[in-house]
Image (cartoon, rainbow, N blue to C red; front, side, top):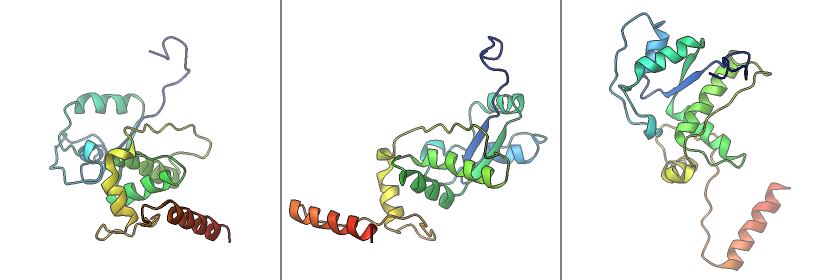
Length: 177
């Protein structure tokens, strides 16, 4: 509609990002859209809101992607958690679903599919406060078989203002030495 109204001169290229543990659209895309869509049994993923093996609107999703030369990328559990943590380091506090989208962006950027000058929008679907346990586990390096490369380990402090101030001062000073 925006193109028909003259508001834009071209349609954006859509990218769908899926967790590798729940990736039926990615698998369909990788087949070249040639085969019939096959639902998958979604495995557990930190991106629980997109843990879907048989999307209800698959036909509309495929139509939208084909209409704009769209692509589909996937992210492993480690990739999505690393991407989520890297985003958090900038002050964002994103959900695992957004971690999937950010991991896909990084992968496509590294492959040269998204160029340095390309304008890119990543939709953040929820706030990280809804997924605190996964963040705690990541930063505590408590997730089996995950390196947690961008972990920022929690520091336990007594509920005492003086002790909190001491820890903060020591942490700030150590970061600037």
